[in-house]
Length: 247
Image (cartoon, rainbow, N blue to C red; front, side, top):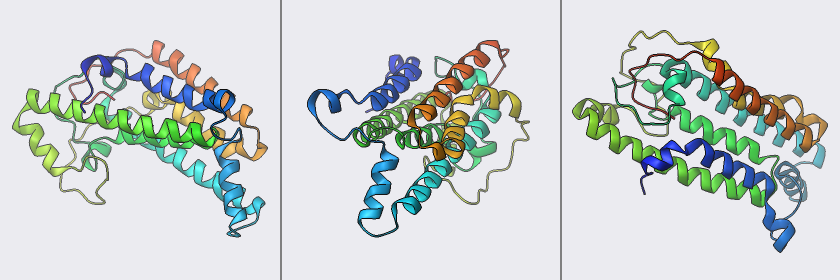
């Protein structure tokens, strides 16, 4: 069930492959499985057919829901990266330094993975329904495997210190209050924002361009944000980091 070291090293490519297949959904054209409409259209139609709301209102509700999920994903990614450091977040190998227990890591152990999951769910709104289902199921399984792999690695490397952190902080669902004191780390907000332009682009696409009802425009917005994130990461200077997670 745990992810291997190779899977961890290739996690970004695997995530990208899952998302691309979700958008492409080749099974619709070749085998006729599913419908060639976007998930937001499918959801709005379902709500209107069940007389929950008319199609126009249902569309607005669905778009707002998608934008809120995208906003949560961007917030978690930027917040987590600001404290963990861009060099650690995008490192190809697992690192075991000091336990990170600051920022969002005081409330939940995997804010970056949860942020990524929210981002994929938000993108699912402009995928075909079967493509969205495919992407969400696979990304959920893969992220859980990454989490279990990291926890096993860090427990072996850091011992009781990390195990105490595991007992104090929930894995996925955040605590509203925490007894862990802040370590006083200074977050690097600008660098985190520049490194996490992809989830920001997903939010922009759903919050500002969804009202055009143009799925291609929203897809291009996300693609441009992804390209910009690769460029900015290439030019961001490396940062020393002694934290544990790399997500």
